[in-house]
Length: 400
Image 1: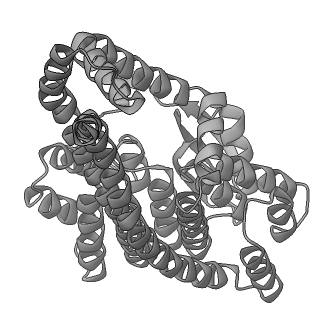
Image 2 (image 1 turned 180 degrees about the horizontal axis):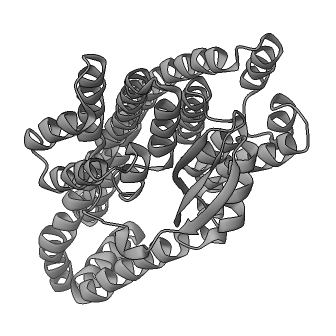
């Protein structure tokens, strides 16, 4: 999305300026007005100011943010902090980003404006929270919250990836073993049975046909798999495809439950962090929707945001989407009623992150016997199918 440089006055009549990332100029103006800014000038930033050095690893960003917060808290000047952090950064792409941010700040730009030029390194959530910290004079506290948020997000992602590592490894081994048997072992039996001229059982014919197809049409099978994968990826990039695939993933048994809990934990953690940092609720919901990671959850948050814009509370629209569990909706309602929505969202996020731990453990323990049974069943079927003619011949000779 484009970035807009703006100048205006706040409710106290003080002159302010900054950069806001938004869908359009009108949307940026509405957001600023909602935040109490009387805009005098707003313009889109030139595209050549958008420097891109590639995506930055989340772990590197978390370490950078944690160290940045400690330096700011210690009273070091902003430019000096960025210079030190850039010099000690191992990731070369991120190092260039930090150096570019330092140069912009040194020339007089705000930290928010400097960070907004690098959307691949610093997303909307990061930029807006830093902006809130700058305007409120609590940049060190905001950076601490950001580092905690990123660290928890990294751990959550690692848990899900870790849960998927075992089944993917087992499936890969199973496919490799079956392919080797089909290509190397089955043809030996096929040549032997062809010489016998005997009528073969149906399971044996199935295995021999599959082996022949795999050997003779392997190139066609590979092309077909590649086309399917590429087609799914292209379809996923379209809004309808993205929505349908995300909805399908949420409906999957066991795995869908894990993904839903991950989405809920991310929603609560993100929105709670933004609200506690002074970001307006509507802007916070917009940013949370864009970082949801699932189109179904994103649409649910945006629908709730539209309802909040019309004067409703958050819990009611969230319940109507039927995406969020009742407990989450009730806790959000309690947080709104008590004026402690950010604290309540943080507690819900903690709870669901623990739930993800349990769900991942259950998934791993359940997948292990299922994968072993599947692998044993496939190989067992192949072995029985190929030795079945020999058993039949032995029975015939035994009767003679």
